[in-house]
Length: 207
Length: 373
Image (cartoon, chains in turn yellow, brown):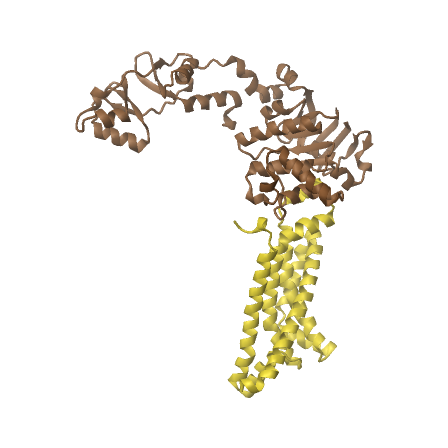
């Protein structure tokens, strides 16, 4: 059975992976930009962050459903939905990372002549990088599981196997869909950990 | 030349600086000092426009600082803060190169400058250039903090309590290094502190501020000689007293003396000394009258277990009366290498002892006040 379905499974894994990578990339970029913007307006952020949090509580299934009505049965629907969901964990972490940079560093930076842009690029973002990557890691792992929903509107991915399994009551299909998904989550998580260590300068590593 | 012309500043209606005018000449080392809230830090930060004044003008070399481009102004004014503020994500070399990089120096020039600067403060390039701030001590970090401020050869250096967070010995070394550097580079320096000793050591001119006004601006010598207000005298107090130290032994002695009765047994006494971590102990009789001391060597070598310590009491320790001049105790400890001196009252009762430690403590309290010890 595994052999017979191998090509289709392979295809599903690739589709799934594609959804995750594209959505997390888009989501993270938007999140970091948003976090930078919000960190300039901390007062506004105090009200905006909880509102954005509410978004996160809308079940993915509902969101994809609504988007489906407007955009249709297309991969874009999945990408948009997953990207939106990928934003929040990164946004929260990036925002916290930026606003918790030691005020002494900001003062030193300003005092020796860094303009706000340079300060952002050379001090605030590097100092927040660790926390941003932690957010991306969370988003990635969530997105691997949310991407299962793509199959709901016929866009493939590992969800396909899971849905078939549930509908036909055949456990093997469920296992065939979920094990690669779990491995993907673990693998990507591990990879991001490695990247994080690599990108953290020695001066910022703990002890 | 930096000129303050009628500068005023208030926060939320509360005046911080009132119509401040003074001039700092090229190459001068100015120390702003005064009680907290006197406006000294505000004054400093107005020079590089981290704080904007409400009214008045600051001119650097006859140019109004508010007319200058902000980056241009700040890259030509070195800035050092108490929290050091080295960027933890950058190496020492990168930290020092921040301002040269803002000024778009070439890579080679920057590297050469980093070497030159590190050498000036005895931090070998090979060993330190590629270290991160968290891999160095606080003193080394602040040396780099000073170098970062000096990197682009600014004509002006601002320092906001730069050594306030360092331990006294490191602070001392850094003060000396700074004074040397400042004289060598002939850089106009404005330095904020609340430590009069530091001000006297470093300043060409001390500006004493209180409640947003300059109370007195003078050379350290002149300020020491003729303080113009009580508040300055209070700040100085610790220093002017120097000539009139008239301490007695009674004033500098420690009163919690470890004493044993002359009938105590050898082993008991040994145990007592071990538990208190002391090498010798004062022996008294039942009426607290001084008999001598025993030391741990004698106890171990000559003491007979089970017997009392009476026959190994030594009498060669110097004793002084409470009225004796403290200098006698110092002489005894300095010149005769005594470990301690026993202080007796007029009835030969033990009232205290004086050790090197108690002398140091009382000296520092007398010179610098209770809080600095």
